[in-house]
Image (cartoon, rainbow, N blue to C red; front, side):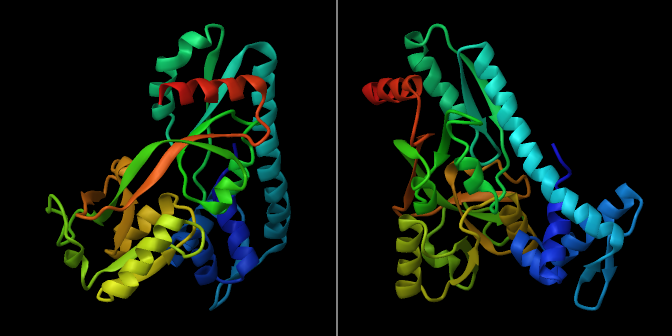
Length: 295
């Protein structure tokens, strides 16, 4: 509901440096500058005075900066209000969907149990896989939406919602289409020697921490580069732009058309399942119980 280039302006102003803003947003400094330039062109005004290290807000930029924070917060509240209005009219389950957490697995599940909910309709609600804002989206379970189907081995996620495991996705490797490994049908871990592997920083995911420990202890020939705790499209963009290899999962094979996803001969996988509110209403609880019966 708002121009996401405003996020870039806020980061550039807060950090005072395009390089630090790029690190915060997990994009390149060039991408930060391009987005600031595009926003200025769109608005027809200069927002940042450029300096050798970054930039400082102009008078106009300071006004946009303050209002942007209000607009972002207001957009989130507006979406939540719209969802509440839907609930007031119909008996509806609202299902969150995004690029990395699509609703299709929920739809497949729904058609196995919907006979127990004959009066219910489904309403899909989009959300952004922004690594800085995803926790606030998870906190909207029970408000903005009733359910998500997501990959979940995150301590931060699990402290904010309930999780019903449905299965596991295999850990795989993504590379850009002209990478030396791109034509391989499968990989051995030794094939990754000499590469820089992008994976989430230590401390939030037990599966990823275990894999990282294995790599550091037994395969030091692989360099590890930290990504944010939660992937978003910028992580896949960085993989494509740098030529690094990216630790990914099988359900994300179509996320970035410039990348190829390749299975690895290892046993690492991560759980996915149904996420819902810690204080779920009766019908949501009942849905979860029905799902448990068919698993």
